[in-house]
Image (tube, rainbow, N blue to C red; front, side, top):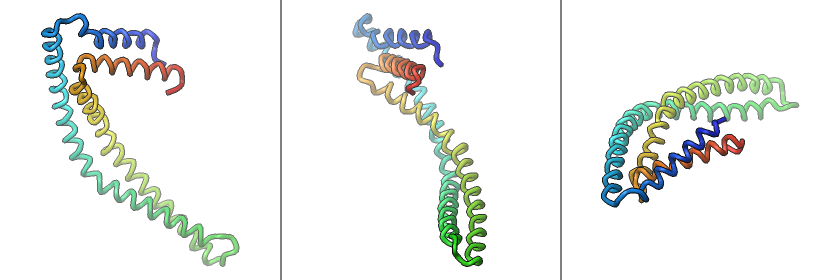
Length: 170
């Protein structure tokens, strides 16, 4: 649960950041937006470098992801084959083959889950934070009201998400 004072502080900061242009002259507003855009561009270039590095790491995990999907597919196919062969009333030989195939399913599903979990934790998850930051920085740079007002908007959205979280909706 997020404290109410944190939500109020976010909303206060959002109102100041979104309404700053009412209190500044056009020249000062342009100068402030240029400075904010330069700061955001610096962070965006750092994030782009991290994204490129993570994309290279992610590419190395693609064969592992594909083999995990293949193992899961083989496991599913073997499961359905074993289930078909081991139905009640089938000869005992088919039931034994079906039971053996079920052990193969356990092996294939174990291999698939191990590989997919490793690929997710080492290939996908480290890629997500730089990607989310890239989206945020792009929003800040290309907002029609400027980077400062866009930051205020992000604060406001964050405060609403916290309110929903406290209400149990989100």
